[in-house]
Image 1 (cartoon, helix red, strand yellow):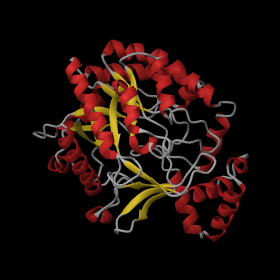
Image 2 (cartoon, helix red, strand yellow):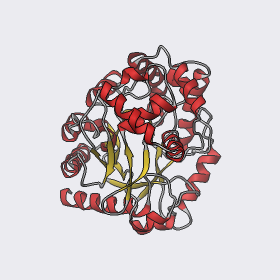
Image 3 (cartoon, one colour):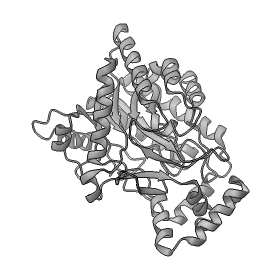
Image 4 (cartoon, helix red, strand yellow):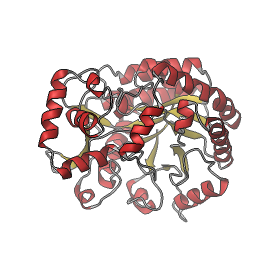
Length: 395
């Protein structure tokens, strides 16, 4: 697999020089400074490519993560038609710049959700985590969302009430800040009123309606992407269960099987994220790859550990070391390497699958740097080294 690394641009705490020392082969990036819904211009794309090339680095911008889908498109309201045309224009410009893989997601309002960004681990490092009791406390007593009580069992409501009563002002503010961080690297973030307004805007949109809107979006952009030779790949929900009363539609194998079947195109594919999908106990990564591997255009290899049983379809979890969580990473990499070999034997141009060590625990010198949560230098370097070893073993 092609070993890539997510880079958030010149303000990233990890430099191009450091990526070279890590052994990264190519870069995953995005134009986070461009407002959602606007066109990514050829000039801005070329500027980012030049920043990545950085003289003799030899690195290139291989994968876009992410070209964001606006809330108007997800709801199919407001300026959704204009935003879709802008999305197609951005794909045209990316293709002209030689970039062929574009990751996106279709999660409403919040693109990922963690209650803690730096939980202390037994080894002294830190990791991101999602605590279901803390989240319920936020939903019930900080956001005070109508209908929130019905989303949690009675014991969890009681536990959240007790937890909230123990929180001081600083803890409440930290919880609020963690939950409203938004997409990593983005300039956009939410206030409580923003979230309430967004939730109100999604009233009447259930999972089937949201899925219909996704299919309608793909019906317009996939034929365009296919003409350009661009491969779109949808990232799973993170975490893979409903939150804040909002629907989730990309959380399981069945969700992806349905998606690639209904929009059958080489330009409609999957971002296979073992961390997001692996939060669910029914996730079988090997079976997923064996059945849908031909549609996987991009891979995120990370691991999570569930911290307790599932409750109402939800659970607490934390970001584990890459080889130490609930997902059998060795078996997963073996399945992916077999899929890649099958593509090569079949003569597919896209036989080599781009992967990146997704997330990472803050270790050693990471602890002294206020870097992007989940994207430390040393933690991801350890992860990439471990994953590289598995790839070498199964080559």
